[in-house]
Image 1 (cartoon, helix red, strand yellow):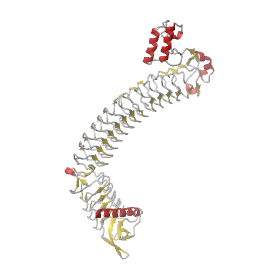
Image 2: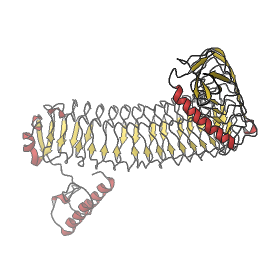
Image 3: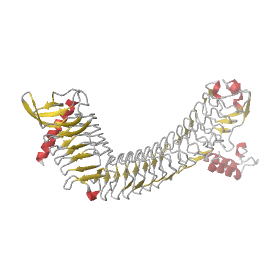
Image 4: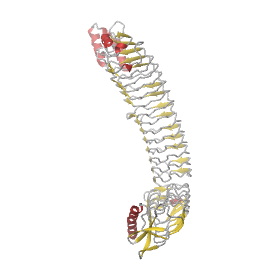
Length: 624
């Protein structure tokens, strides 16, 4: 074992030198019988000529070469030595060669077979990648180290046997070997195995399946399916994940376009990034309750997938998890789901219903962008909020109820939901973002919560059916064009705390003929474009402010300005709010017998317990 370690160490140093030397075109020192060499110490290394297509047909590499009177053993095939030699068909490698450098035979597209002598202990990364005609590879019994993607895209390779000597394998050596029907590790290997004739390479100590093929049967006992283990195996039709598997790593089944039957075991906990991306024949996925997380883009572009059941263990659906699954029409969310990541169901145009459990806390940006949703239930939590563009262009959505506790509707959340006719906003809401309900053309009315503070630019712009709007007294910030081009809007009320009317607030609202402005001091109007028309509209303002509005810039342009009493009959103490303080003051009025006009809340010309009950009812119902 010590001699093996020394050998690997020596070869590693040599290969490092080769990489540096042979990246330079024309780095050869000597040419003999059409083969190019350079020299490293007392060894000769095969390299390429002035371009990367230096060899053709059959090539025989000698065991030694004499240069300037010194004979050197040919000890290695250098990095990129035969790269791009598209006419190379066969090659004889002598028993003096111990190392095959990085990309040594990369894209030798006519190379049909190769036999490595027992002297070869290391094959570096990509050494035989893209040798598309290669059907047979015989690995010598001295091989110890295989780099990353050694046989990547050897699309004609049908069988491979790893010798018992191999002790180190890089990232998936059989990546995209789509014709493989037999994979075997020789008995006696201390690091890897192919137990139970499974036709796969398994790292014994970790029970990780690192490379499979179209006919692999994953044996019980495997714990991890490694990164890219079955990547792009288009002939893989069915796979059953045993109960022992807990992790499926990134790209494990990426691009397995023929996979139509997938069964998960009961022990699975995690599915990695793009694990099943582009499995375009997969129609149904049922996750076990043991699963905690579905990784980023795990099932993205599974274009035949129609049904998904997340199981009761999944807490997170990762970013782009089911993006562009255009046939998906049913998703059953389990009881543990807490977060739906950004873009999770982006472009699922056939998804008609989303019933989210009450435990869900957050919906990421673009999560249901351009989905075919007809029905949406958002649960009762959403403490982490709803991301921007979350339901953008859900053009079939007709109704939505946002849960209490939600404080902000983000930018573009329901933008272009042009069939959205009914929206129920929670009383907890404090802000509505940029173009949040832009082009909700079917929306006829909106009941804005009384504690709403901010309505940002374009929030309700182009809501062509909106007939009336009342801005609560708590609103202090209005964005430009917030209600622009609402062509059916005929009546608008501006709350008492607004101090500035932004540009184009009601621009192109040509039907707007009645405006109520409750602010005692005329709000500063940024430009005359705030309203579409003045001459045909009536403006109602507080009685005491009538003169001020008639003199204020742009307000004076209204054809008719009238004064009125905007006081709230339930606001007994006149502080602008209706709460327990008003109940207490009314109780004092009733007990004292004081003649106070504000005490007659219900308008029956008497001040008694009935008025107290009326105020209490108003507080409890939130109607004030």
